[in-house]
Each structure stands twice: as structure tokens, then as C-alpha cells.
Length: 422
Ligand code: NAD
Image (cartoon, rainbow, N blue to C red):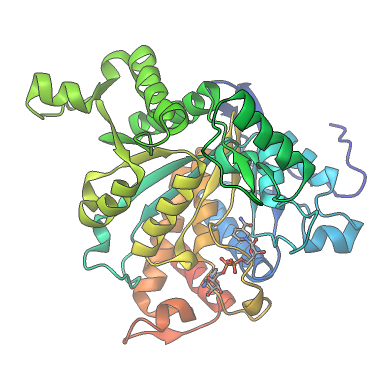
């Protein structure tokens, strides 16, 4: 097959993933898929290559092979091509459908858009998915971290990620103020003097496709409930609409496969049918309490962008923090796995930080490829390594029985466990 890449190499020993049905998210995955990888900036140079090594070991142990295609962005993009986000990188992720990236630094200064936001928006990765579950041996600030097993589906293209805002003191913001006050009638609402204004779009299309994905996941993975999180008591037409559209999509498209919390109590005295997912909703601030106090009652959560960022970070803290929190972005028939953490520049290149978050992000990618045996192996091997007590600094400092090792030694241990467990 001919590819149109000027500057990166397409591996000749791999086969591209093909799409069978884009809307149904159905892929034809070969045994040797071509998978683009961005190692990432800062600590990405540590966790990127080590995670790649662990994923290779898991693939090999289960009879598969990943044909990695190294692509560049951020610092590596600037070094190689003098570009933050070269077209070849975007095109490769687009063309090969399944990819993984390490963290990218957002340079400080006017004119720099977050590369992460740019990538997610350009390729329409509309769902940011963050599974939070506890691994044995990871220290936690709560007494029963094992109760947490919650998957967040966070909308990735609207709300604050739409980026519609105007700076105080500009002509643009004064035009918006005039429109809001004079034409829309909010004449007593905005204080006099300099003001910044942002617009928060929440669409039916954006909300429904995200919530659909969360419900599909709950059904496929035998989860009990999907909770719609919002602040609709204050923002009725944006956050409230998100919840309304969520109930609408559930009722109109899923029939008996779902049951709303109201119906559950009105008609069944709270007793959940075995084969239906409960759809409920919670106000966002309450949800931050609920995940702490009633942790095990929540399974899958669908959120808008900003709420999802806050709540999933809080959930991440409960299971051990950024070093172990994985994530992935999904669009129709595409996946870009990436850890929740950033590039942590002060630890860059020190072979020090925890590669678990990046490795477990790779595990989500393996699941998406349909390689559940490899994905399970990765999780079990990482857990076995952590239980062994030879761990990176972030875990070691909160455990009395542990020995501190570096990123690559930790990955060596995980690879050994993969070989033992396979
Ligand atoms: P960060 O996540 O990079 O680091 C915050 C702190 O978390 C670190 O100082 C460290 O103590 C800890 N930490 C992070 N990763 C760890 C790991 N793997 N193991 C152990 N400890 C870990 O957040 P930040 O300092 O706010 O951001 C740094 C840069 O990363 C910024 O430029 C930011 O824009 C970017 N960022 C990128 C992404 C992404 O690429 N998806 C996400 C968040 C932040």
C-alpha cells in the first residue's frame, strides 16, 4: 500500500487497522497492526519508551505483534521538523485509527494552543475516558480504595474545551458585552469595568454521542449504572440540557436495556433487574462527595468537560494519584490512549517517575484492539510488580515496606511478571 508521509516512516512489517463500520465503532484488527506512538515531552521520554516495551511483551506473550510507527509532536516535533504538531502525526493517527501518546508540554505564552486540545479536536476524539480502579499495593488517602471502580466518560469537544472566550479590555469583549446587555436583556448582570467573557456551548449532538458511548460501555461490560453528572440546578439550558438529553437518548434508543432511577423506585421498589443498566443523575458538587462517601455505588459516569476533569482527578487521587491514572480518547472508530498526567518537566529524563499510568493507558488501547488477554496480562503484571514492593518514588514514599527503583527497572519487573504469568 502507498502512504503519503513525507517525513515519518510507515513500518513495512505491519498491517493497517481497517474500519468495518465507523458509527458502530467496528474495526478489523490484524495480528500485526500499525500503531502510531508519540513518546511525549518531559517525562514522556521516560514513560513512553518503557510503556512501549511492556506492551510489546504483553502482545508477544499472547500471540500478537504491534508494528509501532514513531510519530512526533511537541518538543520532538519542534526538534525534528520545527513544528509543534506536524501534519504527518495527525494524518498517521487518523489513518491508522489506534494510537498512543505520552504527555505533551503546553508552552507558556500567548499564541500557543494546547497540543492535546488541538489533537483531540482536529480528529474529533469526543470522549475522554478515564477508568479509575485500585491496584493492590498502591497507597491511597482513603481507607477502602478497592471500592473505587468507576469509568468516567468526559465530553472532549465542548464546554470549556470549545475555547470561546474574550479577554478583558479588548474590542471583542466589549462587543459581546453590548450584545448580552442590550440585545439579550442581561443589563444588570455584568459588573462595570474590565471583564472577561466566555461562552459554554453544550449541544444535543455532542451530549448524546458521549452519553451513548457511556451506555454502550456499561452494557458491554456488565456495569450496573450510568450516572449523568451536571450542574443543571444553576445552568438549566446547558448542564440541565445535558442530563435531559441523556435521559432522552437512554429512553429512545435503549428500551428495556436501561431503566431510570425514578422508574426503579416507582415500579420496582429499588430492585434492579439483572439485565438493565440504571440511568441516574447527580449534581456535580454532590458527586464529588458521593465518590468519597458512597464510592462503590458508582460504575460509569458521563460528564461535560470541566466537571469531568475535576471529578475524575478526585477519583484518581483516591486510587493513588497521577502516577497510576490511565486514560484514552475515543472518536468513531478511533482511539488515542494517553495517561492523565502531564510532562512533569522537573523529573524529565531522570528515569524516576512511575510508568504505570502510561502502561495502563496502553492497556486500554489493547482492549480496544480486542486483545483482552494481553490487556488482562498487563494489569496483572503491573499489580504484581507493585505488590512486590519494588516501586517508583511516588509509591515508595507512602509505603513502609517498599524499595525505590527507577522507571526502567520498574518496567523490567513488569515484563518479567508478564513472562511468568503468560
Ligand atoms: P503534571 O501531571 O505534569 O505533574 C504534576 C506532578 O504530578 C508532578 O510534579 C509529579 O509530582 C506528579 N506526577 C506526574 N506524573 C507522574 C508520574 N508518571 N509518576 C509520578 N509522579 C507523577 O502536571 P503539570 O505540572 O501541571 O503540567 C506539566 C505540563 O504538562 C504542562 O505543560 C501541561 O500543560 C502539560 N500537561 C499535559 C497533559 C497531556 O499531555 N495530556 C496533561 C496534563 C498536563
